[in-house]
Image (tube, one colour):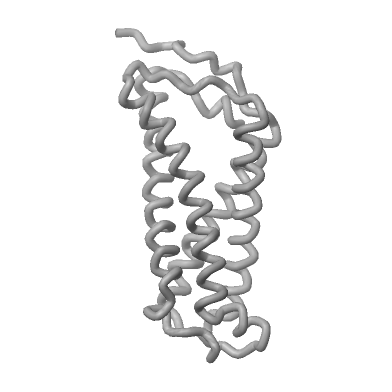
Length: 176
């Protein structure tokens, strides 16, 4: 079955959505390894990284709010068709889960800053005010959601590659 050219790739996301999409992607790709690295070092060694992680996390949260607003208020291309109803639903599901995960990670990050003593530690310059990571409930959720987000990101990229290989459609044209 020839699945070639079943989508109108001339339909693009608006410029704002494209910028926010790629800015969010870059911020997330910076946040994840820093967060993983910080998990393995002592509180006193990570004060500078915590500040950077919080700043970039806030940027990701703001970008997610903007992107969510744009999702409902700006026109967007029709959903991609792959020739498989399951794949078509999976595309929509993955995009939706990205939004929920980004909000969940942001909220759990804020909870971690508050309940883990990170905010007090930064304000007072005292890493000793940071609680043990095993005692910070939002931090556990934060880490789990970040890992799920990274897995989903890999699935998303593999899906784009699979779509190209099976349909010869470069769906990236819609978001560049």
